[in-house]
Length: 140
Image (cartoon, rainbow, N blue to C red):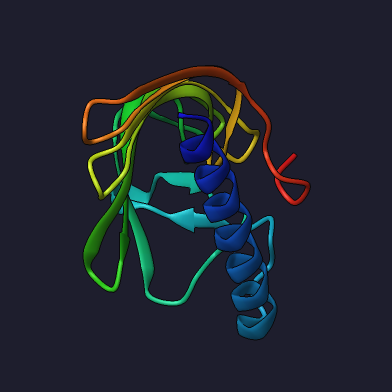
């Protein structure tokens, strides 16, 4: 289980490094908000080419607000699905379902993209890890 935790941290670090490189190469602003369907926007600190999102939930002042589901897509393929309570387009606590079947429930970083604080990570194979998660240095 400890080895799996280290693997997960390494995967998060590598993903964030790639996101930062792609953001720099694309010229996208790291604090960009991405348009979702119905004109409602959600937060995306690392916009990527060919990335899109749908939002099913309430919208207030053009931003996702309240309980809803944020579904990310890359090149038309489903990515992370985040179910939670959104405030001004951001989520701080919720359930993230990863494309590989892993599931995380708990606190999230300000950008909603990293596990932060107390949470439970349940792997697709049924293994379960309850821990205090820390985002990498690039996710605050």
